[in-house]
Length: 301
Length: 202
Image (tube, rainbow over all chains, first blue to last red; front, top):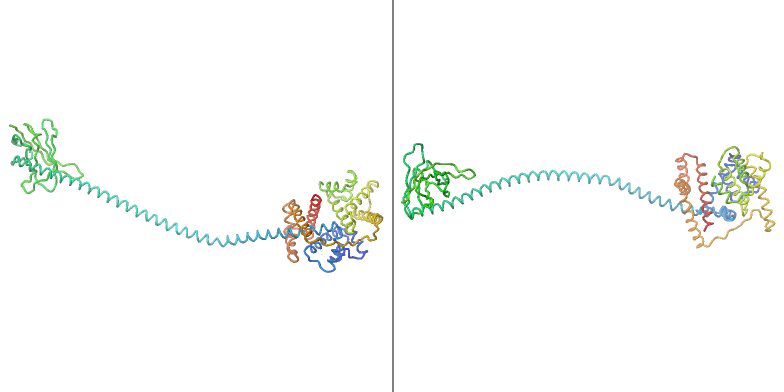
């Protein structure tokens, strides 16, 4: 409640606070400062402003003189002045701290804002790079897969060729051995028994007489046709149907007509009885193919 | 009410519980300010005695209330309104009596003595400021965060910036500039009390 709302100017009220008004006005304001709510509030605000102005060095001239001579004459008011000084220093410190924090935050925000395009650019580059790398990886994987398949095929081919080569080497070795055996047999017995393949209703069985001391019994087994294939000859005991001897790989003598496979059967395996020999064509990677069967009888003196 | 009771206890009012309650009711003049009106009136009386350069303004304010309480006790009612006006009438008597008493004790003619304070030495002033800052810092820490924010915002900057800031602050809080000023003043007064208590402890 205000009894005299704006009857006094700020300047008058400040002069009242500084004890610089005439006595009559001082008394009147004394009463109003206690009784009038609005004036009491105005006085407080103006007093704070006055004290703050002093604390910040804004008071000059007569007003400063009055402040120092009258206002600071009271311990209560001196404490107000001290508080104003402390408050000013503290508020400045806090404001500076806030300003620093605000500046830091602003700087961080600005940097973050500026950083966004960089982040996007980096992200874009990463995406592109990742894409390229993925594509490259897929391509490399494909190439690798093809290479692996090719390598596997090559390996298979090499293995097949190696197997074939090995077979041919073995065959060659066998042939060489057979040739050696044949030559040895020839030296022992110069005449080989020529046998024809068995046919239904075949006539007489051929008889071979093994002379004492003979190492082998040479046989010339006629075949229908011949190529560069290798052949194997087995000696079977007809009574038991068991193979008692197996020749190394042999080649056919194509220059003879009909072509023959010359084989020297070790004499040690031959007793005086009937025998049968079977001829098989050897094929790499598959089972030997039956060519023909031949029967003969052995006699020993 | 706690703050009120502390304040009363601190200043050692002679009012008994019952008479003090009657005083509060009378000061409230029909409203219930929870003791705020008493505190407000006491602040005004202390300021009045202080401006009249009385060495013990708090004691004189309490003496004023004691006399009002006694009148209420004896008469049952006081017809002068508003209550603040009656308080001022009694305070004026208390002031005059104090002046007379002091005159008897100290032969000094002036009721408004002009005391020119010697300027403190720079090093003492520096130390004093450091102590005040420490004390004020502690008192600020005791405030609620929103009050601490308000007082810092209210008193920062100077001149035009300060006026603009206060206008913004009032708008933000949805109150008038005057109400903002009063709120800031109350916080400042509480800080002042806190600093006073802390200084006495040191």
